[in-house]
Length: 263
Ligand code: 6PG
Image (cartoon, rainbow, N blue to C red; front, side, top):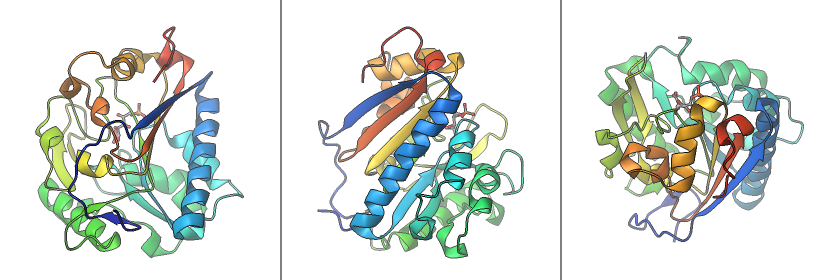
């Protein structure tokens, strides 16, 4: 069985343990509030049970409103939170495309935290492979997994790209098949193509995953993921199947379209 932060059992995907819900919300504002409330609930339950809440933040633009609401929350026990990233662009941490900068401006810079609570991806230390390896070392140190095993996040916050990617796991990329590293370097077809990302064994070891998806541009990818259309490698978010954890999709009407968002 897993200890509080690190699972040492061999990673096996035991389907059937995964519970997936879809929360349909009318708009982005309600999405932010709904997701923030879910994060708060999970954080306080984790702190009650294990004394700490370890969350991997998502990138892109969708999480902005949720982070801002969390920063204003009176219910959050931030002194017990540890912040990580599910993926990062290989840019300086003050670059407008940095996922760290998004979190710093909307959440971390607005709440009382000690340095050791923020586990930033050190993109400045070298090329993407070195950045990925350095972050893997940080995860192993922080989760006490230095002798092997897989860090078990209390929560992973993920988004969905219009092409079905999540974190920086892009369709048909070699990163989808990475099972020995916790973190790997990868490339996007988008601007800021060099990235690092948590690999699927880490993502699927999480106790909980919350996807936040907004806008009609995501509708076809969301439909493919929720309904299991196409090949999983073409829609990497479909490969997020925690072996012993929950998945919650918070999506607005524009992204869910007319289709019911049944899980
Ligand atoms: C990133 C993210 C990525 C993002 C989706 C959705 O670094 O870009 O991790 O997976 O969540 O691309 O991005 P938007 O929220 O901007 O639509």
